[in-house]
Length: 80
Image (cartoon, rainbow, N blue to C red):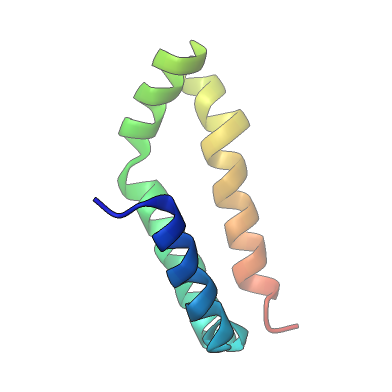
């Protein structure tokens, strides 16, 4: 398994390539994150129930839905 320090080193090296400055790269990364959250919504709700005792309604309105809306807004306005 990869250690945290090697992961951080790899991330810093990738950041220095400046690929993250590209708008298309950022949009794709945000879309991937949005899709991952939507595809794992049930698992996330179960984790929020287990860890924080949140109901499905609370989990969605205060965590999942909030993040999905922020992602939607950012994706829509990133180019401007």
